[in-house]
Length: 517
Image (cartoon, rainbow, N blue to C red; front, side, top):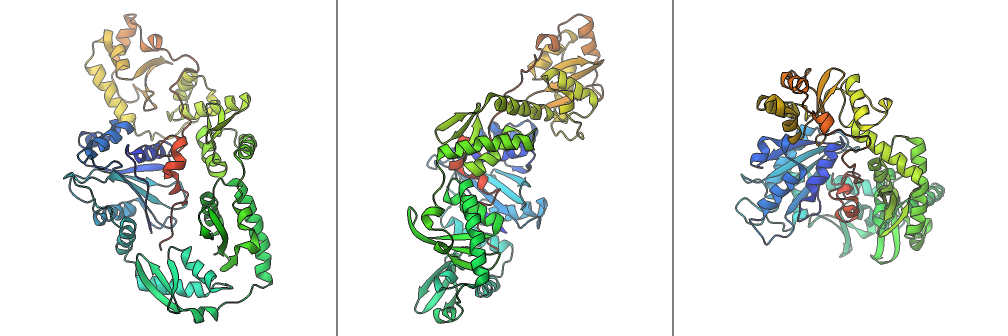
């Protein structure tokens, strides 16, 4: 089990990140606690409502500039369910000092990676207005999750030492790198190697004992070096930074890299190949300068252009959101307003690519209305000018349906026939008479309701039409192609241009995760 504390912010951008994950079907809201009136009708609360509430709540202590506390708790694979992770999340908050009555908390269950994980968003301000302590936060977080999971630290350290001894390594430094790439510190003291974690020395092993375990590389290791050289070159060319390269190597191949020297002037590195339990001297595989020689922005922009064309051939219906996920991951760029953007540089996409992607985005947005039958497919196709065969029927799982039905009923009950259409439109409901039935459409919540099928009384609507009152389908007709703007944002706490700074996406592809158990 891993607990990772993510970046703070002043405007609670983590709320937007998680809500966008929900919108795209990659996460589910788990809990909303101590949010006042918003909590009573969560289906009516917008992303901004939740952010504003947390900002206003945190204002009771104006000395805290970045009040957001954002953490992620991740298990291995599907080892723990949503309910089990939620239970762990509440206990984790209590142990970290966020368990007082009145503390506002949002929880989201994410299932978009190979590991189930829970995101928690709250304020660093306690209900009394005091600052919740962040002293030794990471160490306390580690101890909290270990305590919750009842981790036997002695046994864990003993198993880690036994595992390290089973690796193939040529030097004592390479032996120490096994620990250093697994969340431990390792250093020499008085003829021993000290193994430290969580601020405490967990064990010692004599340097002489480790020297006796060292052995030179043989034929198998030399073959592996050739394979590793090809892997490093391939993924270096797809990465924008050392951090990104290290993350993808660890996730795909179980490879960890220990850089030697200063951050901006390294003199070498060691590579821990966990798949074959071997530690290599980096220069035997690829020189450190060549390893860290990432492509220029111009080269990446050119390659990204070809990548987009290939993706559209492979997946004709791919959207901006999906493209940006891969572009950000492999090339450090994204699509915005018909251009590929990396840093402050941009290059225009060919017009036929722009139009194709825009069409896919539009179809994806319309599909978000989740039509439940062929009639709704035909209605949406006509309203938004998309081919019928580009839409498909889905089970009636739209969580906003009941809310929209309730609002329509309330307006109908409280409106005279002559005003019913205008009052529905003022409520954000567009009404359409289509194929002999009345439909209500809420574009903000992407919900379409067959009024008769929902049990709504439509007498007043029919009276309004018989009296030749202009209905909203005439008065507010959605002309072809006009629709709420489909954003070019990816699943981050802020707009994609902020993603590299906030790093919220790192939890979901495990870039920020350090294996703790």
